[in-house]
Image (tube, rainbow, N blue to C red; front, side, top):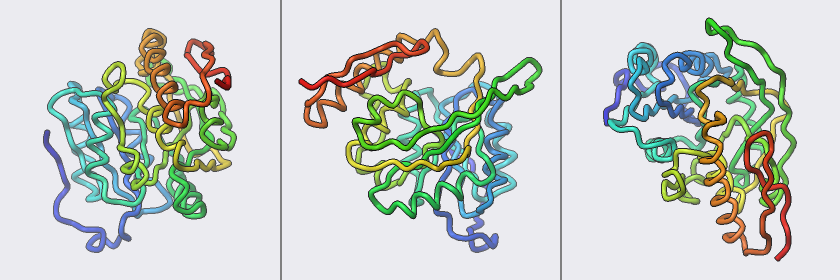
Length: 279
């Protein structure tokens, strides 16, 4: 494992405020996508952020692309793992390095709106310490030939009201803007799950947090999500996701008192909890 830093500059020496949020980009062989995400962080309406890119052993040109950004901006750090270990391992390593109150995950093929961090920070601080996750609406795009993008529309996300509501909340939420202390209190991401923590890391950590904290929604599109042929959630990984999903939901319900059992349904090729039945 090795790290690339830009030098000895500090926020004070560059005229910036002390960072309050670290944007974490976990990445594996996403060289053709990652520039857009990095650029979207650089364009944020607030400047008191850090960007931590944790490379899970990429074999493509990711390091070469990221190095140019690291050399330009002292807020950007790049860490590369020697071996591919999976997204949960990668996020846990990132969590061990984050020293800001907030941790915002940005998938390497997606990007932020210019006010994403500002809106999430406002909502989180308004909510107080019981709020551990802020999310918003998202814009969905599809990659076309020649790296052209086609806009597919906006997905609105309702307010999640408690842990059992989240169990039957089928959509994933974006961005995932976390309270760092809360992530640590629930133990971060586990690799001791089916598939070794390579799938459904988002659902895993949110189920952990839902049992102890509240989620708050921003009523605005603040995230851009890209659909493409190499998304981790592509159809050939359906059975792997299903195995992980069954395990995570059953474990969460048991952890919450074992009062309900899940009734699973398939929704657009993905296994979801259709409803909860009292035991």
